[in-house]
Length: 213
Image 1 (spheres, rainbow, N blue to C red):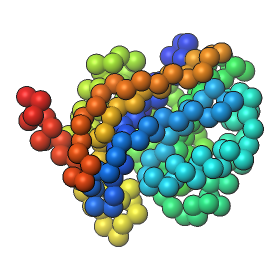
Image 2 (image 1 turned 180 degrees about the horizontal axis):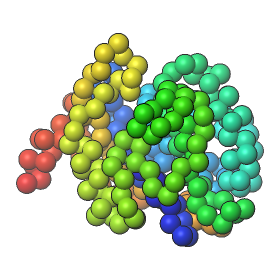
Image 3 (image 1 turned 45 degrees about the horizontal axis):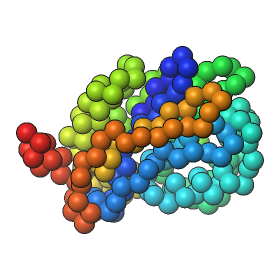
């Protein structure tokens, strides 16, 4: 989820890393700073997509987010050289000094009727975007966590479209990570929630909700 406000931009993700069967492996801080760019990025899909994006970004030097934005198509080419046709998404949230606003860039290697996007195209998103989670209308901790609890309660295709058939399972878990990008300072990070999912077991949101009741 991303939320652009007057003086900052928020990126909020879960941290669940799971195997091809939906077994929770560990929590991962998916909101990752981009050196020099006053921006953070996250990926959706296989964990090696994160590694590929990080490796591609490290081949470039940025002194601000605007330089990153102008070179994002070149970064995407590098990512595709590493991953080939692997379906995944990446999201970049940063502060544009040129436009005096927070901005969010989004790219999928597969099209999406939900986002109305074409594969391989980098889009400048609006002030609110969900990326698998219902959109929060503003930054409010309780509202954001409610949207993540809703997403956690419903199964999704854990293959992210890579399988011959969908494999339904719970995929939102680990921790809820929150990054904030502001002008002139390094991004800040915090944990909003820890669901205490058990490594080696499938994410079971119903069990977790029953335990919390």
